[in-house]
Image (cartoon, rainbow, N blue to C red; front, side, top):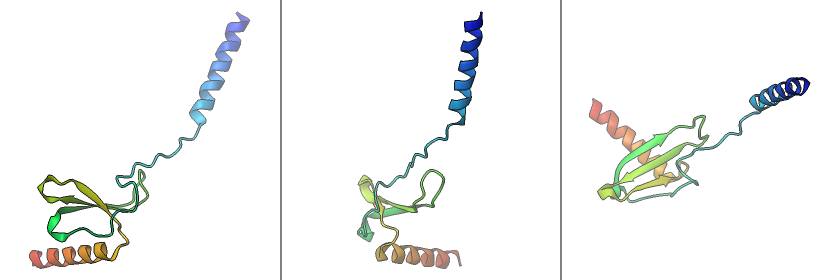
Length: 97
């Protein structure tokens, strides 16, 4: 009986210890690296922008290419991407007016 009580106490202590362990953060970014600096504008079907979040601390910009050619990650710091986003926002404002 005494050994059963010791076993229960040890099991409870182990359970409390395991529950108290901090989880390691797993980054689940869509882009493995910084991405490409540019892509031909004619090949872009649409652009997807993902803000930093709990699952990935990076700003991620992904372009979906026409004709089912896949997706490409773009470097958010590149001049091409900054200019493309600025032009897209200007076009969006003009079409809304």
